[in-house]
Length: 140
Image (cartoon, rainbow, N blue to C red; front, side, top):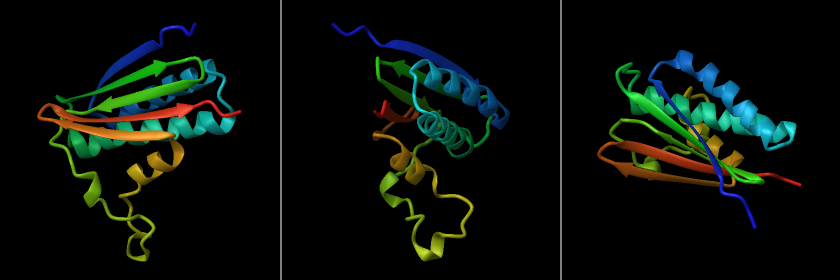
């Protein structure tokens, strides 16, 4: 019989200085799940990318708006959800970061990176904000 997933939730203000705290928490969670070094790094990259996007693009760095981060921990997986209080976006309209015209752009890679590092990525949009959910399963 498998155990009920553990949940760890954090709410932060929309300030980039909060990213360090979230990155440290993510590293602790990845270690707790005994993820490989590569997976620990990939999870930290994915979470900081998603939270950074929520702060900058979703909440427009408005310190009065919050970002809600929740980690569901299973025996050999973690699901992360990151919710902002922004207006949302259409993931189908994002430009391809591998297009030669986009290679030198400073932004536009976050979702691409998430999809390449995680096992599953999904979005949901409500009038209260955008939520991105992504899952990583332990390898090996």
